[in-house]
Image (tube, rainbow, N blue to C red; front, side, top):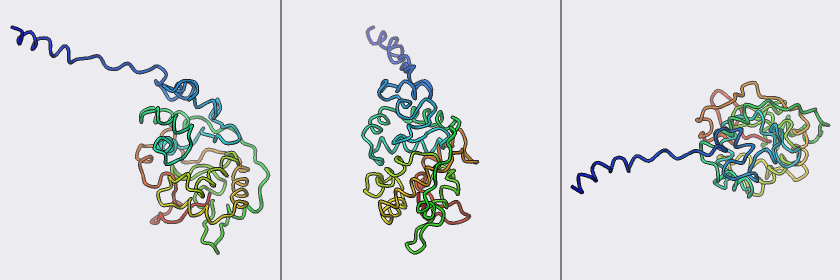
Length: 246
């Protein structure tokens, strides 16, 4: 009798209700403004602005960047491939679905206007022509003549804060950022002097921001998983080996 009762009730006991999803994780927008399960301290907008425009200093613009690229960066913060204590703590509290929602939300935002700043002559030369004597490709080869970005692996540089760009170049140089699978950015940053890093960052930041022509609100997940999503060569018809310089 007891065995029969167990058989009757076992299926019921095994059919638990699905876990309730937090309302703070329902959409990318709610995560961006609430911090998801991380609370207000983890809210993206506190550093990256109400419209994803960045803070003009160390927090970059997110609005209009490729969704696959943004998702990959969150993954890399969580894993430590990008060394940033605050971002690692934030990204680690988001699961893959949460990161995808946030990435898609920011990718769909319009690029905020960015007036052109004063160009840096030394930075312009490196950005536009590179340095053939040292085997340096121009930054424009991968990031576009106007810094507009070229595909999910080559993000826009135009309109990003100069301080942020310089910090990233130094991070690659010092090995604190190593999420360029083929090591192009690490190699490039180590061939440039600190003054040259500052100059090329200043030039790229002075370019007016614009959404890349091929950018989409949400990139296929395959973009995020590809081996070249953070350091890509110039788009070509048969080669992916040339380094980027910015």
